[in-house]
Each structure stands twice: as structure tokens, then as C-alpha cells.
Length: 370
Image 1: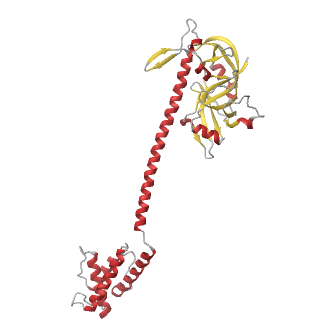
Image 2 (image 1 turned 120 degrees about the horizontal axis):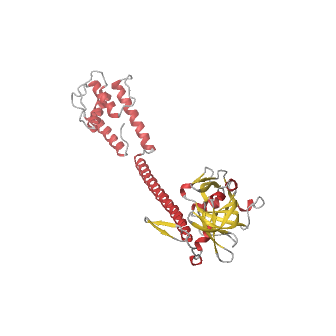
Image 3 (image 1 turned 60 degrees about the horizontal axis):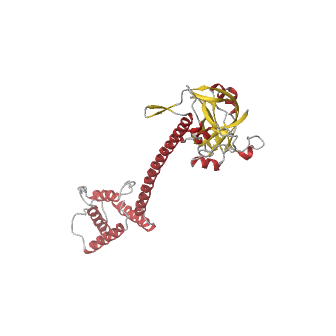
């Protein structure tokens, strides 16, 4: 009898990536061999086997390629006639067997579904048709009542956690998680599945084993998500620290920034210094890149080579230079003039004080002499 089935697996943070277009690409296992309990239409339990020779046949593997990806399972098979209605993406053409599981890559192109996946809708459910043949046996130590053969994939669905098919006739492996184990009886002599917990092994019913495996997969996905959240929180805190420092640096720079008036005053002050210094240093002197103090020291030494500015304050150098320029203006400058001899006149003292006051007023506005 040909029936439809759903297998379940999970998307994790580690197996998905966003493309430059904003699409979501995932590579994940979608089914594996094993024995899984299903609830029949009459309410009974049937253990169905997906055996490697059937599940990993060339026909089944090929049927997984280029198939629609849907948001939940539609109530009908997906075809060319209803593709636009149901499809939110497509599987790639790289289906292959690895680690005893059937893998495939797929891309989700619908933005709404992408957001659902990012927000936790991570369960995958493979929709396929299969010939279920009544055939008893054991696989990997677990008994089964029937075998799924001629498995042909129809679509791959993104489903909410624990969701099963829309109709009773369409059942998934996850349905086993809701089966009451009292309806399942061991048949004599068959080995039961083994669970290993804290290095101890326990024989359990296949329903319990299936449930445990699913919970472990969910735990791995949750741990991966938590680790990514911690990483993002650390990156956020790091960026906030950088932003706070940038804002602090900007505020400090704004404090030091010169106003238009201060810039104009600085230019005027520099021009006046160059004009007065040229009288003593001549046109051949290279003023480029020199600070106001360096220019004043050079001007003073041009007429007083014994002048030593070491350990002298800026105020001292400024006062010395002002005295020189006032004397030069009053008496005229000559190369052999000696500005250290004689006392300045009252008028010269007045001019010196004016220059000092003007300079102090200028520096109070926050402009440092250069």
C-alpha cells in the first residue's frame, strides 16, 4: 500500500548561513535508517523499518534533489500546478549519504519563513511516498512489523516543533513521541534498544529511544543557539565600548576645537610674529614648521648669541622678545644692536605691557601659540 510519511530532523545555527541576497541556505540530514513506531488508523501501533538498502537506493537519493521547500505540510502533494502556492524555496542537487544519514542542501527564499526560522522554527519534516510492506524482522537490534520501500520524496517542510501531518493517513516519525507506551508490547527474545546515560546502559522501548534521540537533537540545537547568543552579546558590548570611547573623543575634540574668531586671531598673531621676526632674522630664515617659541628664540639669538633659553618659561621668552621688538621699533634695528644694555624707557615699558596683555587675552580663549 502506497502511503505518505513525514520524517523529522532539525536546523541548527551551525548548518545555516545567509547569502548576500538575504536568502537562507541550510545543509542538514533529513532522514536516516531505523525502526520507528507509527499509530495506525485503527489506533494500534506499527513499527516500520527504513532499511539502508531501500532508503539509500539511487532512486530515493535522486528523488530528494530539486524538490520544493514548504512552510508546514500542504494537504496535498506539491506539483507544478500548485508550486507557486506552497513553495518557499528549493532543495539543491547535492543529496548524498553521510554518517548513515541522508543529507541535502536547500535554500529558503521567502523572507517571512526566513524570519520564522531565525526565531526558532527549526524542525524539518520530509514529505514522501512509500510502499509499506508487511514484513517482520529486526534492524540494529530493534524489531519491526513492516518495511518502507520505494521511498520517493515530494517536498521538504519547515514545521513547528512536534507538528505531525495534516491528516491521519499522513504520519511522521514525530507521531511516535505521542504514543502511549502501554500499547506497545515486547515480543519474546528480541533485543531492545539501548540508551547510554552517565556511562550506564539501559534497555528501553523503541518509543522511548526515539523520543530520547529527538530530545538530544533539540538540546544540541538549543546549546548552539545559546552559544551564539553569548557571542552576539559579547560583540554588542564590545561595540558599545568603542562607541562610548568615540563619543568621548569627539566631545574632547569639540572642547579643543577653535572657533572662527579664534582661528582668525591665531592667523593674525602668526602673521604679526613673522613680520616682527623678519626684521631680525631676514628673508632667508626658514619659518616653516617652527613654533612661535622657536622663532622668538632664533630672533633673540640673532642679536644675542649668548642667550640661553634652557629651563626658561614661555612667559620669560615672550617678555624678552617683546622687549626686543619694542626697542627695535623705537630705535631701529641693526645687526650689532645689543638689547641687553640700558634700561627701557617708560614708553617702551608701556608697549611691552600692551603686548603682554594682548598675548594673555589671546591665550585665555584657548589658543596655544605655535
